[in-house]
Length: 216
Image 1: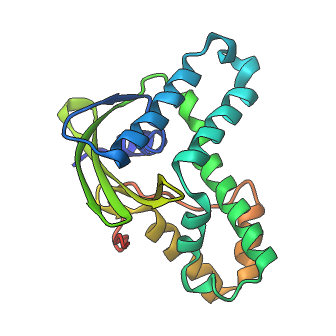
Image 2: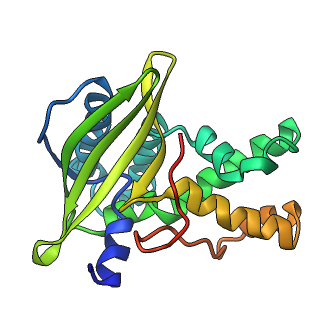
Image 3: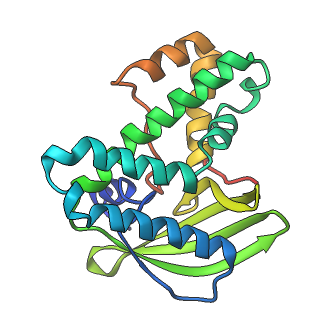
């Protein structure tokens, strides 16, 4: 079993790993995922964006690429689950913005804080119509590995990520369980209030949490 602190560090890196190794046959979903990762690598290695003084523009550049790799609107919708249908147009727009901010606080802002980046090994790719899953693994210390599955769908001629499974635990399902609990025990307004707080206590899956089943 991988030690918890190792999983936490890895979780901060999984969305935008800093290195990639081709391992198996790849089609368009894998190619487009890898292309996005390569762009992030270029940003992090750009001398003009290096150093503490360039933190804001560097993270803005990473966020821009992340928005092309990940469909945060679709992730937000799936994470809110059944409560999405009851929201008005403005409420949905606000929720997508808040969810995107949460992801950026939880992941993207951490990417360039860890110099010892993991190497992502691409594995099998499965395509079913407009949906695909790209299997990858991240080698950890002491010979351990962390399986990551990027769930993608094709929209407007591009493949974008709408969910990520960490050692079999769905990121979207994990957040959906937390959001649903807050809405049911408190209210949707309370969920929005917590998302607006910079200290919002929403945990990301570490690969050991139960109940995070992935769905299309």
